[in-house]
Image 1 (cartoon, rainbow, N blue to C red):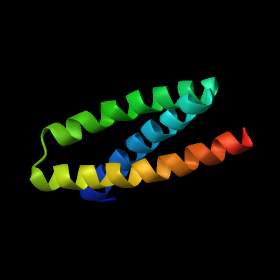
Image 2: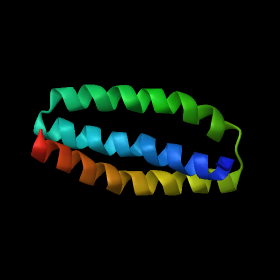
Image 3: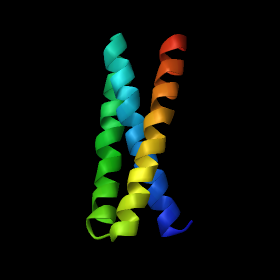
Image 4: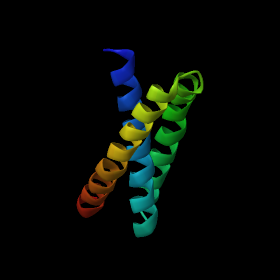
Length: 84
């Protein structure tokens, strides 16, 4: 996998969990909050080094992944809450 694709995907994944966490908090899903909170922090440890030394293209790619992750996380969080 290319470094650019990995950067996009890890940004997307991290913000997916941020959005899911927001949905879980709004609905009082404590187990969901805990799982999402752990994943946010864990993925952040991977992302911080990648983006801290990146250029503007990397930052835009990272932000684009975060944008996609926001929407994805909302829908996944809503789906999980409707089942769980």
